[in-house]
Image (tube, rainbow, N blue to C red; front, side, top):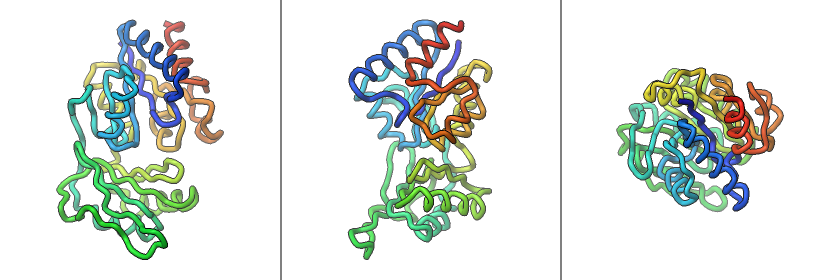
Length: 249
């Protein structure tokens, strides 16, 4: 039994023809006795609902950079950390220019800061003091450079408690360093699958740790920097990756 973990945004095709081909390939992968998982930086309820809407036949759907796992509609497991770090992280994100900050918890994502037009005020929908744990904090910035600077500084300031992963203008901050690579390692061990039988595919900077850890593919729409982390090859689609692996068996 082998495991494929695929990023979603920018990786799985969502146009009608491309999605149909990806889905058929996923079905063939599963029919051969293998496991397919979606692993995304999106908040868990959102990526779960997207996978269900598009009828993607994934065995597992992992959101929050892999920290929250669903099987169909049911929460399978999650990994969280104490919310003690949230005030410091929140201040740092705002100091670096974030205009949207969302705290993800098991089963729910809460907006705690949204900059209003003109940047005069904020729309506070969640109280930081109400959280006892979190599975990820997501923040959005105005530029790639601003996001990269925020990631670098947060990893210096708070790297013993959280780790910031860049996704273009979005920052995914995971607790205790539980990134996609760590989450995928946990899932493989839970399923009794050797790491040599784990494959992954992605397109963005927050996929790099996963791409470097396992046998990996990158879709061709990725930047050259991300493409350089493909240990097997760059492919047009998830379907091309699956077809290659099935032919290689």
